[in-house]
Image 1 (cartoon, rainbow, N blue to C red):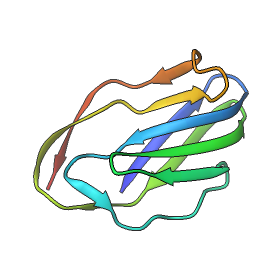
Image 2 (cartoon, one colour):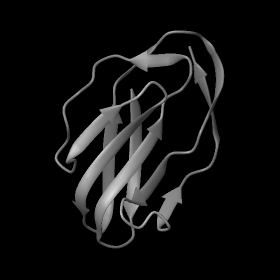
Image 3 (cartoon, rainbow, N blue to C red):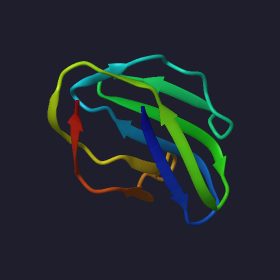
Image 4 (cartoon, rainbow, N blue to C red):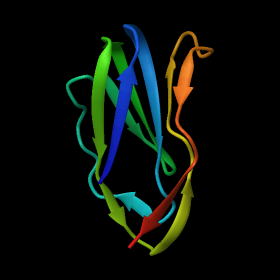
Length: 100
């Protein structure tokens, strides 16, 4: 299971959050959208979560993953951006993930 935490510094409308999937994993189940989501798309290498409006605060999103291959993988940074103003965005640092 991959848990994503997003801290919104100010009210934002039409937000897209891209969450990369580790190379050694695949999707366990493709769950329905959460309470703060308008749509969710599953791709081979990432999940895109769309929200119409996020108030200032802390949000948590969950993606259920199934480990396939053991190893240490480099995980690209997750990114949140405004859909209609992509110059306003935030992302985390590059990470290393161990799949057991």
